[in-house]
Length: 149
Ligand SMILES: [Fe+2]
Image: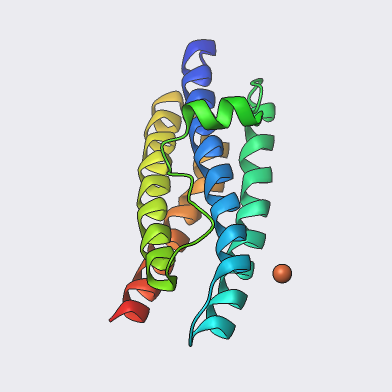
């Protein structure tokens, strides 16, 4: 594998990592602050999602390390480079769900970038790990859209 293409995969993974960390923090906020008639459902669902996000964040970071990069995780770096929006404490339950749908779309975009560069680099390991992430996020979005109907 070319060193330079390897680093392109690392850059794409790091952007995914940064966005995932903002998404994770939003999910925790939503878990804590959700109110309304669907409290019990959403409070549990948001916890399930942040636990899953925490595992994925770890997997992304460790793939960066396996490729010889440095995983981006300082708050400074996250705040200045994220393109998933960091949310306020108080939001309506439906706004929370809509914001998760948007964040998932952004993560899917990042993942498509990861897969494209990994394919160009012949990086089978990265392709193997992250293809299923897209399917999972698409499934989440279908379910959240069904919830909002
Ligand atoms: Fe909790």
